[in-house]
Amino acid sequence: MYQFILGKISTLSAGAVASALAEQAPQGARRSPWLAGRALLAHALSPLPLPEIVLGDQGKPAFVDDNPFWFNLSHSGDDIALFISDRGEVGCDIEVVRPRENWQALANAVFSVAEHQELEREAPGDKLPAFWRIWTRKEAIVKQRGGSAWQIVSVDSAATQLHSVSHIAFGSLSLAVCTPTPFTLTSDLIARL
Picture (cartoon, rainbow, N blue to C red):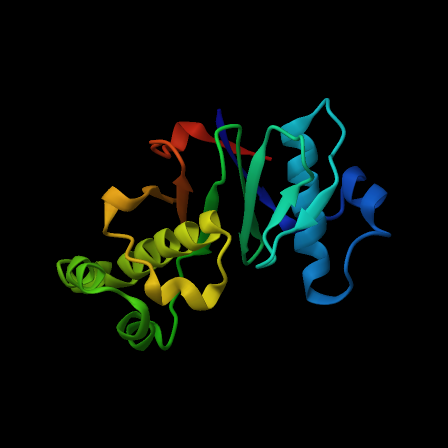
Protein backbone atom coordinates (compact mmCIF):
# COMPACT_ATOMS: atom_id res chain seq x y z
CA MET A 1 0.00 0.00 0.00
CA TYR A 2 1.20 3.47 -0.92
CA GLN A 3 -0.75 6.55 0.13
CA PHE A 4 -0.01 10.14 -0.92
CA ILE A 5 -1.76 13.01 0.88
CA LEU A 6 -1.49 16.76 0.25
CA GLY A 7 -2.54 19.45 2.68
CA LYS A 8 -2.08 23.08 3.62
CA ILE A 9 0.25 23.86 6.50
CA SER A 10 -1.81 26.87 7.56
CA THR A 11 -4.94 24.73 7.97
CA LEU A 12 -3.42 21.55 9.40
CA SER A 13 -1.21 23.35 11.94
CA ALA A 14 -4.30 25.07 13.40
CA GLY A 15 -6.49 21.96 13.76
CA ALA A 16 -7.37 19.71 16.70
CA VAL A 17 -4.43 17.30 16.22
CA ALA A 18 -2.00 20.21 16.13
CA SER A 19 -3.52 21.66 19.30
CA ALA A 20 -3.07 18.34 21.08
CA LEU A 21 0.61 18.17 20.05
CA ALA A 22 1.47 21.85 20.54
CA GLU A 23 3.60 21.25 23.63
CA GLN A 24 5.82 18.77 21.75
CA ALA A 25 6.32 20.97 18.68
CA PRO A 26 9.56 22.83 18.06
CA GLN A 27 9.55 26.61 18.19
CA GLY A 28 10.35 28.91 15.30
CA ALA A 29 10.03 28.35 11.56
CA ARG A 30 9.80 24.55 11.87
CA ARG A 31 6.77 24.64 14.20
CA SER A 32 3.90 24.90 11.69
CA PRO A 33 5.27 22.30 9.22
CA TRP A 34 6.00 19.94 12.12
CA LEU A 35 2.42 20.25 13.42
CA ALA A 36 0.94 19.91 9.92
CA GLY A 37 3.01 16.78 9.28
CA ARG A 38 1.82 15.16 12.49
CA ALA A 39 -1.78 16.04 11.56
CA LEU A 40 -1.35 14.36 8.15
CA LEU A 41 0.13 11.28 9.79
CA ALA A 42 -2.71 11.09 12.33
CA HIS A 43 -5.24 11.32 9.49
CA ALA A 44 -3.49 8.62 7.42
CA LEU A 45 -3.26 6.19 10.36
CA SER A 46 -6.72 6.86 11.81
CA PRO A 47 -8.27 5.23 13.77
CA LEU A 48 -4.90 4.10 15.19
CA PRO A 49 -3.15 6.53 17.53
CA LEU A 50 -0.12 8.37 16.20
CA PRO A 51 2.92 6.19 17.04
CA GLU A 52 6.08 7.55 18.58
CA ILE A 53 8.41 9.09 16.00
CA VAL A 54 12.21 9.01 16.22
CA LEU A 55 14.89 10.60 14.04
CA GLY A 56 17.43 8.49 12.15
CA ASP A 57 21.15 9.24 11.89
CA GLN A 58 20.61 11.78 9.10
CA GLY A 59 17.48 13.26 10.72
CA LYS A 60 14.86 11.31 8.78
CA PRO A 61 11.77 10.77 10.94
CA ALA A 62 10.51 7.22 11.37
CA PHE A 63 8.08 5.31 13.55
CA VAL A 64 9.59 3.37 16.43
CA ASP A 65 10.30 -0.34 15.99
CA ASP A 66 7.46 -2.80 15.39
CA ASN A 67 5.41 -0.35 13.32
CA PRO A 68 4.53 -1.74 9.86
CA PHE A 69 4.62 1.66 8.11
CA TRP A 70 7.28 3.92 6.62
CA PHE A 71 6.66 7.54 5.71
CA ASN A 72 8.19 10.71 4.40
CA LEU A 73 7.06 14.33 4.61
CA SER A 74 7.93 17.31 2.45
CA HIS A 75 6.74 20.89 2.30
CA SER A 76 7.08 23.93 0.06
CA GLY A 77 5.39 27.23 0.74
CA ASP A 78 2.04 26.45 2.39
CA ASP A 79 1.82 22.98 0.81
CA ILE A 80 2.78 19.79 2.63
CA ALA A 81 2.89 16.20 1.37
CA LEU A 82 2.87 12.88 3.18
CA PHE A 83 3.82 9.63 1.47
CA ILE A 84 3.22 6.48 3.53
CA SER A 85 3.96 2.84 2.74
CA ASP A 86 3.76 -0.65 4.15
CA ARG A 87 6.38 -1.90 1.65
CA GLY A 88 9.56 -0.26 2.91
CA GLU A 89 11.36 3.07 3.03
CA VAL A 90 9.93 5.82 0.84
CA GLY A 91 10.93 9.33 -0.08
CA CYS A 92 8.89 12.22 -1.38
CA ASP A 93 9.50 15.78 -2.38
CA ILE A 94 7.17 18.66 -3.15
CA GLU A 95 8.09 22.00 -4.64
CA VAL A 96 5.98 24.90 -5.73
CA VAL A 97 7.05 25.53 -9.33
CA ARG A 98 8.33 29.07 -9.06
CA PRO A 99 11.05 31.27 -10.46
CA ARG A 100 14.37 30.80 -8.75
CA GLU A 101 17.04 33.32 -9.55
CA ASN A 102 19.95 30.87 -9.62
CA TRP A 103 18.21 27.73 -10.92
CA GLN A 104 20.53 27.32 -13.92
CA ALA A 105 23.66 27.62 -11.77
CA LEU A 106 22.17 25.15 -9.30
CA ALA A 107 21.39 22.71 -12.13
CA ASN A 108 24.98 23.07 -13.37
CA ALA A 109 26.27 22.28 -9.89
CA VAL A 110 24.13 19.24 -9.01
CA PHE A 111 22.56 17.68 -12.14
CA SER A 112 24.12 14.64 -13.82
CA VAL A 113 24.97 14.58 -17.52
CA ALA A 114 21.74 12.67 -18.25
CA GLU A 115 19.70 15.14 -16.20
CA HIS A 116 21.30 18.04 -18.11
CA GLN A 117 20.42 16.36 -21.39
CA GLU A 118 16.81 15.97 -20.20
CA LEU A 119 16.70 19.66 -19.28
CA GLU A 120 18.23 20.75 -22.60
CA ARG A 121 15.60 18.82 -24.61
CA GLU A 122 12.89 21.11 -23.18
CA ALA A 123 11.59 24.18 -25.00
CA PRO A 124 12.80 27.45 -23.42
CA GLY A 125 9.46 28.09 -21.69
CA ASP A 126 9.44 24.57 -20.21
CA LYS A 127 12.94 24.62 -18.71
CA LEU A 128 11.95 25.96 -15.28
CA PRO A 129 9.23 23.31 -14.71
CA ALA A 130 11.74 20.71 -15.98
CA PHE A 131 14.29 21.95 -13.45
CA TRP A 132 11.77 21.41 -10.63
CA ARG A 133 10.79 18.00 -12.03
CA ILE A 134 14.39 16.81 -11.93
CA TRP A 135 15.05 18.49 -8.58
CA THR A 136 12.07 16.82 -6.87
CA ARG A 137 13.05 13.41 -8.26
CA LYS A 138 16.58 13.83 -6.89
CA GLU A 139 15.27 14.95 -3.49
CA ALA A 140 12.82 12.02 -3.28
CA ILE A 141 15.67 9.57 -3.94
CA VAL A 142 17.91 11.15 -1.30
CA LYS A 143 15.06 11.20 1.21
CA GLN A 144 14.13 7.56 0.53
CA ARG A 145 17.70 6.60 1.38
CA GLY A 146 17.62 8.72 4.53
CA GLY A 147 20.42 10.89 3.21
CA SER A 148 21.10 14.57 3.72
CA ALA A 149 20.58 17.40 1.24
CA TRP A 150 24.28 17.69 0.35
CA GLN A 151 24.11 14.18 -1.15
CA ILE A 152 21.83 15.39 -3.95
CA VAL A 153 24.83 15.92 -6.23
CA SER A 154 25.63 12.17 -6.13
CA VAL A 155 22.12 11.14 -7.24
CA ASP A 156 21.27 10.60 -10.91
CA SER A 157 17.48 10.56 -11.13
CA ALA A 158 17.71 9.56 -14.80
CA ALA A 159 19.33 6.22 -13.86
CA THR A 160 15.96 4.50 -13.46
CA GLN A 161 17.38 1.01 -13.11
CA LEU A 162 18.75 1.98 -9.68
CA HIS A 163 15.46 3.02 -8.05
CA SER A 164 11.75 3.38 -8.62
CA VAL A 165 10.98 7.07 -8.92
CA SER A 166 7.82 8.73 -10.18
CA HIS A 167 6.98 12.38 -10.84
CA ILE A 168 3.81 14.33 -11.53
CA ALA A 169 3.03 17.98 -12.12
CA PHE A 170 -0.05 18.73 -10.02
CA GLY A 171 -1.33 22.25 -10.53
CA SER A 172 1.49 24.56 -9.50
CA LEU A 173 3.28 21.73 -7.67
CA SER A 174 6.05 19.39 -8.71
CA LEU A 175 5.68 16.09 -6.81
CA ALA A 176 8.05 13.11 -6.80
CA VAL A 177 8.22 9.82 -4.91
CA CYS A 178 10.85 7.12 -4.60
CA THR A 179 9.69 3.65 -3.61
CA PRO A 180 11.19 0.22 -2.93
CA THR A 181 8.79 -1.37 -5.45
CA PRO A 182 7.46 -0.03 -8.76
CA PHE A 183 4.84 2.69 -8.31
CA THR A 184 3.49 5.44 -10.54
CA LEU A 185 2.12 8.55 -8.88
CA THR A 186 -1.00 9.76 -10.69
CA SER A 187 -3.44 12.53 -9.89
CA ASP A 188 -6.18 10.07 -8.94
CA LEU A 189 -3.89 8.61 -6.23
CA ILE A 190 -3.43 11.97 -4.51
CA ALA A 191 -5.71 12.65 -1.56
CA ARG A 192 -6.23 16.23 -0.40
CA LEU A 193 -6.96 17.40 3.12
